[in-house]
Length: 109
Image 1 (cartoon, rainbow, N blue to C red):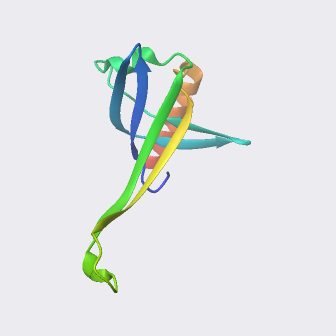
Image 2 (cartoon, rainbow, N blue to C red):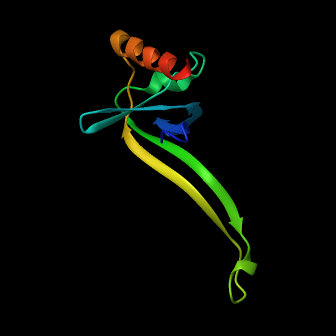
């Protein structure tokens, strides 16, 4: 999650899925992990963040596997890395946002 810090956030509003691809940051506090991001205000998905279920998808590397790799004739396949993280969504309060932005600046500078 730290090495591939770009991911997809999936939420549902009514029967409609909301999906956004964004840079993500992972934080650990005691035994809990938190994933934060900063989403553009024009992206309406952030308005759905109210302690609902959320899915975050991290994509790793991927490559095709040719059938010629097998000792006998077989069909080609795909080798990939993906991580699905389930949790609750929410919006940071002012203090949490300030701390998160400080960590972001520290990481970027």
